[in-house]
Amino acid sequence: MVMVRASAVRWASDDFPGWIEVSVHDARGQDHRIVEKASVLSPQNITADAAFPIELWIEAAADDIAGDEVVVTLSHEVETMGGRRSLVLSSADVLPS
Image (cartoon, one colour):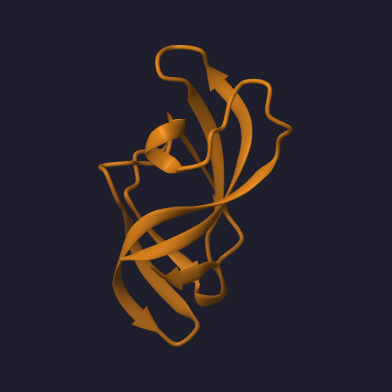
């Protein structure tokens, strides 16, 4: 397991238990957005009243490491708004958990 650098950019929905929108930048600088339950993405108590953006680290599995890039698969069946579960990230944005 690894932790991936991300940024919670806004409160997305009050639907139980509360959903946030998160941004993850890949190794090419492309922004990937994830909308998911706050409690799935972070142990922090993020609420609608939080001061966004909030840096956080989300769980993933490291599938491949090639130089300064790491291919990860997001945990808990989380996927981007574009339907991707795997991303190629800069090794600077990935930490062992």
